[in-house]
Length: 178
Image (cartoon, rainbow, N blue to C red; front, side, top):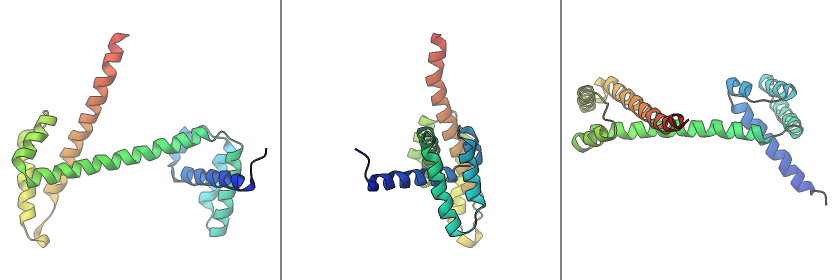
């Protein structure tokens, strides 16, 4: 039994949405995806098109081109890109939460931080916390925010180093077994 007309329209809309998601990817990611040249050209034509109606028609064409291609690798590439952005946002939120916690409650937060990140330069961290508190105590027109930014950068770097270290620990034992 042939698919219904509504099912065909839904499938066509899904492919157009996939095409729109591909357009959101940076060129470096698109180059890494193995896609036919005609799809690559259709995406480039969409970016060059200025009118609303032209973009709408070009998006329909992109959906048509994707029908002739295996769409699963394209979906996987889009999902991987979106997951990466979500993880980056989570890391920034985590760094912001640590900064707020360190500034608000030095003793317990500092102990917790040092327990999780023992390689941190304690003197530098305490200095940055103290400077951020001094800056926060000033009136808004006299604040410069430098201490807040420096503290955030230190926390972010430590969190990234911790994540990389955790990944290395998982990978290394497998390499030793070979």
